[in-house]
Structure formats: C-alpha cells, structure tokens
Image (cartoon, rainbow, N blue to C red):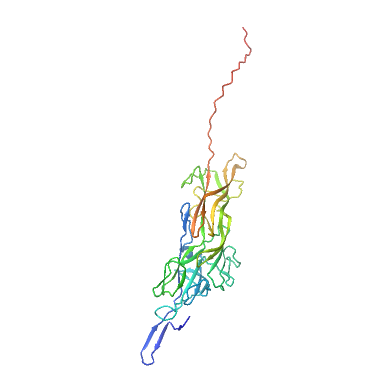
Length: 414
C-alpha cells in the first residue's frame, strides 16, 4: 500500500481555529462477498436429453463442500501469472442460510473510490474451483482423500502456497463409475461493477483486477465444467431393426444381464487444470475405460441360474439413472467403439437346471468417432438387439415316385 493513511471508519476532525466540529465519513472496509452460479454443460450426440449436472442448487446443498478460492492482492499492478496467492489460499466457501460464507472474512483494499483519495487503485484477483477439497499440506499442495490420507483420485494436488503462479489442480479420473467428479472452474458471470460504477471484465472472462465493491455487491462466479461427460444408457431392443423410442419388452421369463462394458478409443484419464485459463496440460490417456461397477439391477457375472436382478429393460436405466463418466478432454480424446459382455437368460423347466443361458461378447466400432471436448456431455445409448427365435412348420408331401410292388398271398394260377 503506497502513500496511504489509516483512518477510523468515522473520524472527527476538529479545526483548532474555530469551535465548529465537522464529521467526515472516509472509506469503510467492505467484506469480500461471493455469488455463485453453476453453468450447464452443452449437450452432444444421441438423444439430446439433459443427463443432469452440478447445479447452483446442488452446490448450495448442505451435503456439498462448497467451492475453493485462491485470492491474489497485487496492489496497483494488474494480475500476472507469476503472482503468489497472498490474499486467499484454497479458502473454503459454503452456503449457509441464503448466502455464501467463509472464514476468516477478508476485506477489500480501500485504495479506490471517490470517498478517499489515493495514488493507487488496489486490485484483487480470484481463481475458484469446485468441489472443494481440503489440503493435507498447503506447503506442498497435497490434498486429503476424505480421510487423513493423500488423495490418489479426483483432485490429488494443487499449487503450493509458496509458489508464485496460477492456481493449478492435478486431477485423476476415478476408476469407479460411482465416484465420478464433476470438476468445475470459475469465471466471471457478467461484467463486474465496482464501488464507483465502473465495469470490469466481461462474461466468461477471468475474475481478475477487481477493485472495491459496493456494500451490497458480490463477486459473481459462474462455474464451468472442466471435464467432458459421457452418459451411458443400456436398453434391449426386441425385434426392431433400428433404435426406436418404444419397443416391446422381452418375453416373460427372459432377462438380459450385463457382465462388463468397456469404452474403446483415446480416453483422457488425468491432467492439470489451470484455474486462470481453464485449459488442461500434461494430460494422459488410455486406450480403454472399463465401466465398473455397473448398476446392480442389470449386473451379473457368468450366471448359472436364472438371475434375481431385474435385468436390462427396453426403457433403459430410467430417468436420471444413466451411468455418468467424467473424463479429461485430453488432446485427441475420442470414443471409437464399445465392447460388452451380456447374457440372455430364459426360464425353461424342461432343461436341466431350469434355464437356458446364452453368453454374448460383442464389439462395435462406431461409424464416426465421438470427439471429446471440454464442457460437453455425450449420450451413448448401448442397444442390445434381441431377435426372437420364430418357428414355422410345413408338412412335406409324400414322394410317390416309387413303383408299386404286388405281393401274392398266394399267387392265383389259371
């Protein structure tokens, strides 16, 4: 802070030459407040259904850990990527009542505004992400896995609190389909308006070089999706030659159960996300991704008896029950095919064991690869085509081409 004077919030100035006392209100310390909005992923591919995503409401929910913020005070200088997080470091912000709160509360620098003169215009920059994770050690940027151990999946590391650089998160896609993480990074929702009514920045730009806000102002953060989302549905299609919206169910006494499902292609598994640029670096990919565990109501491994689970339905997994995978949008990331192992099981009391079980191992290369892009969600409908065995019967005519043979018992003689 340069050439600054520290005043009480209300200062009484006594003029020694006269008896008049004037009261002057100088710059008040305003707390930094946040407003948060979760963006919606763009929808790509198959059906155009909204498969669900992190919303403002879910981020505000009591079960949510909220979001994390890195804050940078640069005095009168603009933000640069060689700045240390000297104002906030991985500050957790959670929703309480009707507002986003955090502790300890931080206040805007006062070197800005017509109510007090200063040679400088102090600036703050904020880099944010969600969901929040707790540090194991801020000094080395390690992250807890929900216990006291170091995380090996999800956000596994972040920029150290000693480093002068953009906040960068290291992220590893969880192996379990039930533990996927919708990683978000924050940008400006709309242009920011400061205490003097000046507009700073624009929608979708970094939250940088912000000056003091009004008493009722907020730093409004729009969270964008850093990953790509693949929403998988599995349904059986009985005696239909192409995907349709409504098909007949499999016959009573028949269930289709799935043992394994694997995506093929170049699938991003990990990388580093820059919270200032929103860009990925140092990404890695795998040639396949095993979707496991599968939903319990369709899963069975090598069944030998009639399954007790519901099995695959012609209506699919149901609204809101798709298998949602969150993958890193690595360079060249794409899905080129699917491999699935499933069983068609039919009750039949005439058979030994009372059931027929047919194993199917099917691989399918997509005609056009699905190119994986950041912030987009893709619907992948796995359709298990079932063709019922149909019988028809015709009785063949007798072959009467053979000559007749006479048998005399006995032969008459003239």
